[in-house]
Image (cartoon, rainbow, N blue to C red; front, side):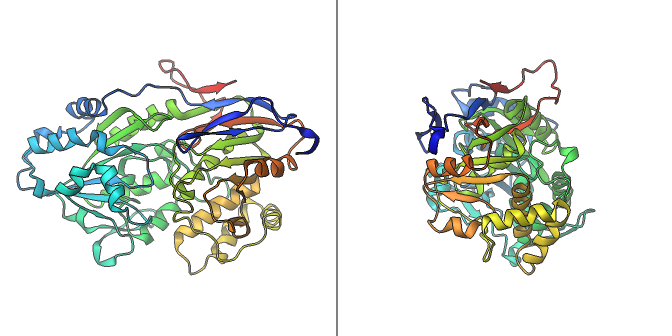
Length: 459
């Protein structure tokens, strides 16, 4: 990095069960680390879940229902999410058994959305080895038209196709986590069903809700301000089925800290309020550089890259958003353009076009391709218009830097920093985000309830 030198003390980031040491240029000034409010996870997740199940929010307790001979579908998140469902699934099954549900009445549906099928060993980790043998389970297939039920169209124009097993169920139980989400505000709630168990066309149309020139990043948004959330909740409402959620709020180590069970809207709203206080990082001032780490959303590039989007408001427009993305399973299913322009030329183009013409560019370039590629492309190009984007990973294809276009890709962290140093001021300011996969940045002027301590920037 020339005469800039490096910092004497390395920054240490969680990295695939080990630690990644990063030495920044010596002339850069670290403003601090943006860390979530630390909440200790209960030693026994099952016991904590059982307690929440005994007093559900806005819904009848599962154990007090009459489920003898009724068909119950339990929907769980897939391999791309670190939610340790197996640790708290026991009390859910006990409640259902107490209500008269037999093993043969239960079926698990893995909410893969448009992801690949979960492998058997991944399902065994998600459910527990014994349960993966004891119960029927299957992965949702978003492209299987015969396996989808046509439920109608939302007021926002989304044609709703959901897995037929949901339409045939007497009770649907969703077990997963609530975490920050770039397009939705927060995950969890009925997101397990749409997009989790929806048709590909439905998923694409729902993801385009709210996409426009004035706003492309909804991370941390309340439900009332999230068109995608409002659309999916309306869409699932077309099922007219009894849905009960078990939402885990997780800490920065991806450990469940608290459970919100019951009505899929009311329980979810309480969960998002808690997670916002836990994971929302107050940023006193934006920096020239943000170094965001993907932990604990480390499964693949689709999940790991979210650390950059989660951290955008910590970075000055024109600054450098840098991601250390572990990508345990490599590229994953993220769509890579068949054709692209070189990074510098593409960034120049989108800056000349301006934010209002980017969506039109993407729609023209992606004509005839899956709708999901439109929202992914639009989000990425709006980010590129605002900031320099670069990522480091040792697990991505060697030629990805040539194919990506919208971000530079490096297999050495020093290479990433050298590239960034040429694009920011010599005495650049820096925020470090160690747990960027489950946290999000927000401006300091956001107010908080007096009863709750707020997450903050720690120097």
